[in-house]
Image (cartoon, rainbow, N blue to C red; front, side):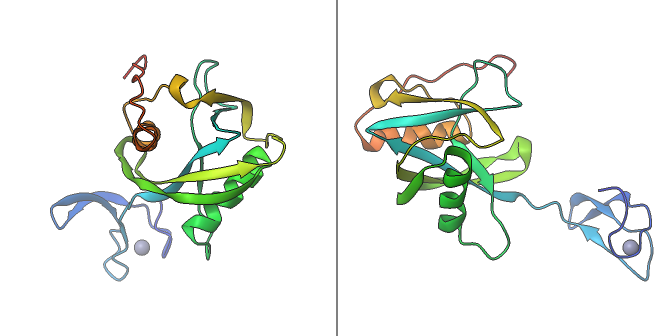
Length: 169
Ligand SMILES: [Zn+2]
């Protein structure tokens, strides 16, 4: 954030409560950009006994992940999750349970991960370029954020997935 949303003064780097912050130098305003992490919902989508992994249109060819999305104002996490599954996969989902809550510090997000049971015919939304259904015992997880959610859900099914090593991490 570059300009103050209250008075449009250019923000400066400062400190508040021992944490570096962007703050408004206008003494009558005193706006502080808290930069709190955004909550993101993520689904391990179970479909015909397999897990759906999808590739975002902006991702490299080899990269597949869970269905994720930001919540809309006024929406419960569960409703937002099922809306994302419908928008991105065209599937009707049912919340199977909360898997857990995970940090994604690099993106300043908190991941709320659900198991979603889904049915219907897959129809990809605009954000996705490809999808695949992977048998549970063939799933590989990745060692951060949504990958840990996938691992933790597979463990509830008695499966310890191999962890992918990602290039550049
Ligand atoms: Zn200001």
